[in-house]
Structures are given as C-alpha cells and as structure tokens.
Image (cartoon, rainbow over all chains, first blue to last red; front, top):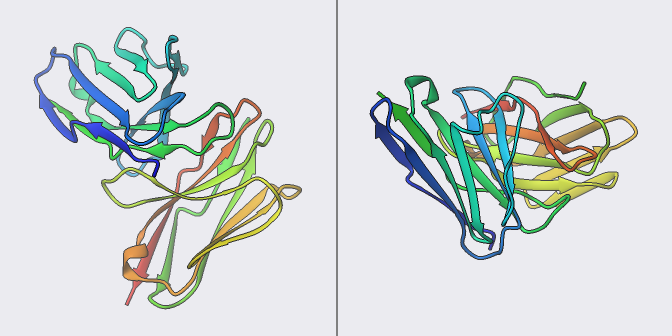
Length: 116
Length: 109
C-alpha cells in the first residue's frame, strides 16, 4: 500500500515554456501533498505544502507565480513550472500523507526536469 | 534555529553492521523518520520513531532518545544494495519535516 506515482518521470523543455508535473496517490486518499526540489548531492528542499481544496502554502523564497500548485482532489496534485528557465532544471519530488499531523510521507518516484 | 546533523559519508563492509547517527535540535518534536534514497531516485520510507527506544524491522532498526535529541539507524547483514543515502527527518511542532543532509553509505565487498 501507500503508492504514489508521478508523471512524467523525465521531461526536457525549451526555455520559456511551461511544464506540468502530476502526483497521484494510487491506493489512499492524500489529505496533504508536498512538493520538494532536490539538487545533486543535496538534501530535499520543501517547496510547498498543499491540502485538498485549499491554496498551497509556499516556503519562503519559492515563487508562487512560477511554481503553480493545484491539489484538485484527494488523489491528485499538480505542479506547473511556468516560463521555465535553465536554473529550474532539477529533480522534483512529490510526497503524500493520508492525514494531517505526524503522518508518514510517501514519495513519488520524482521527475527530472531539464530546461534547455 | 532548527538543525539536523548526520555524517556526510560512511563506509562499511558487506555482511557487517553499521550505525548511522542523527542528532537534532528543533522547535518541538513530533516524531523522527528515516528514509533511504538510492542515487537518482526518490526517498523510500524506512522507519518512524516518536517514543524512546528501539524499533526493529528486519535487518533495519531505529533508535530514539528524545532527551538527548538523538537517533540512530542500525543496518545489519549489510548487502551491496544497501548502498544509498540515508535521510533523517524530524517533524517539528507544526508537523513540518526538517531534513538532514543525508548520509551516503558505501558498501564494499
């Protein structure tokens, strides 16, 4: 149980385009979903936390208008990188938890984004 | 400030035992997590401790001492596939996970 999928697994795009990444909890309802970014050999950096049906809470320094997050249902959250630039190239990972509070986060497989 | 410390890298031999330590200073404590992350992949959940003591799960065990702000992950009968980074994370008073930088574990034959 507790499977989280992420799509696409890899994406290459041109600078200035937008990219949408989907995160789905396959066998449980995810009250809360998290979006992380990870640079090579670095720890995870939390970008935002989203609860189903409400606006995402962004971490300090993360641009809300650049990284659009939609948590439309209890099994789906999307991250859209708008007007992508080469510095947005990174490994984006989502995680989901079944409840609020100290629930274990289960991670998706990640999406590797390369912006040319 | 909030801080999670764990060694950057450790090396161990196949078949041996290794202990990865994690110390933390956070505003509040609502549990400590250990995750395994293979290169190029997302983390996978290993363990969760919220009470003091040892939790055993197969070859992996995790220990917590809240009074000392300390945890360790113990891996027994090491296998080559255990080569990975091991991430320690603490849920603070707001249940937000504070992440350590990870310990890269290298297993040698």
